Image (tube, rainbow, N blue to C red; front, side):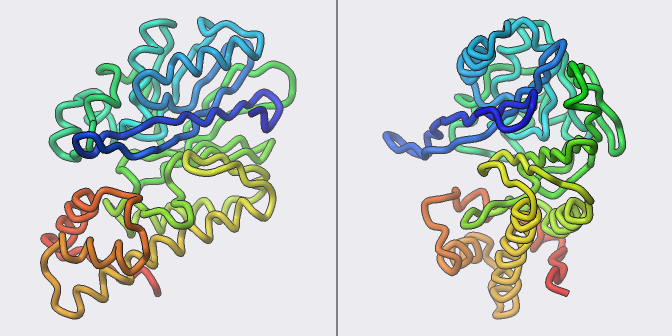
Length: 292
């Protein structure tokens, strides 16, 4: 889907094995920026390189022209295809240093954040060639005047090293997974940071198109509406957790089950992952009130 000059969105479908004979259908968007070379934002899971290469050829270009992969964060549905793509093209890989450990040490990520089917989602280990920090500017080597620099915006919360990328002159914002979608369950690793990050994106002036990893592109006022919806999603989850704690609940699994049931999120997200992240906040007593 071509949705802006020199930018193409690819919806990559994949499945996650969550139990013997049981899979969860998922998808993620990655983005191609065409210029003198090709910049790829995120890489999908293992095997997605084939679909990405086919899209590049369909656009009349050569996959060997991929010069850079920018990873918005370390989770497997964003880094899983990078090893195979880099091996085939020799491209460089850029990401935020806060996610470097999980990107470069897959065993570490799998131990610290167990995701069903993790090994099947990752094509291999990769090394970051360039660290991206807040405020950095990236030239995507675009031809003509249609595109300019990408500005890196550190938007932690979904992960410590999550980033968004803003093409200020065109108003294109790539938000990765920083903004939750309506009806989904936002990753609860750091809800306070997530709220701060979304509010920061909400304050950007001139966002014309929002390209997220979980949703269709949103244009104009709809882009800001999506940010408001994402903010509300985090706050609803957080309010439910706070309510459970206020009523004396201490078991993370029970709090996770109640949260999923209250918000009608069954079948959309693995309960153990929610329970583990909630447990971290309970143990550290770091459950701020985000609703003020």
